Image (cartoon, rainbow, N blue to C red):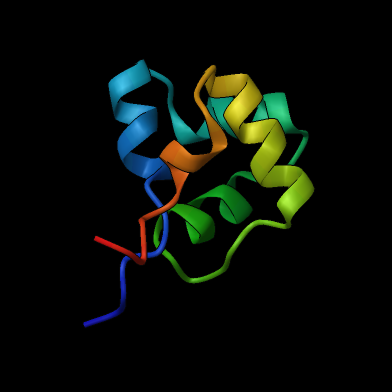
Length: 68
């Protein structure tokens, strides 16, 4: 089972935004956002920051903590 690295998909649901909407606001291909949401690829740090701004969340909310 792949390790869960990000919470972007979950936060999109909470915020009521589709992956296609995020892709448009981020000026990225929807397939890129799908890959990120499915942990098949990871966003560049500048894109992660922009995603946090678009979703109006702290960037740390988009990541899974490695410390308990």
